[in-house]
Image (cartoon, rainbow, N blue to C red):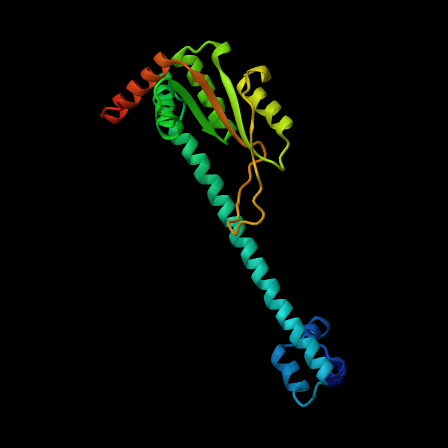
Length: 228
């Protein structure tokens, strides 16, 4: 380009710097090295306003970099989670009847009531509730009219909508639901609940002494100990 070209670029760089442009901004206009820009503009003093502007841009750039880095990390974490879920499902594979039988026993041992004569399984996860309804029907041979539904829900949630949701999920008619327990929102409490479930906690309930004792026997058989 020659000296004239370099001189015109130098003058433009100095002009932009005097206006408060950062070296990065000048480099977008003039295709030279950063060291050249620094050499050309090293004696130009910025006003307090210009210096403040550049300082803010640096902070914004750093913040933007942190946001981009966090976003990339989040995307990697989501991709890893998706892959692990996929791998987990493939490792389980297709469940046999016995697999379902043992899985239901384990779930009831963890979440079901042990009170004699009363069958009660509660959870917030619709998938687990649906699985256990199928399990009770398949392995306990519970008659449909014996099932009862029970909801524990916070007062700021829609109870009617929750009832319809759980009725569709379980196949239990609304007329077989117990009166819902409405939990008060304790706004004065220092304890903060991180999760307030949209449809509350649902309980599958029935009174069947024989079914309950069979389940306790199954749990004993799996755990190798007495449940009495």
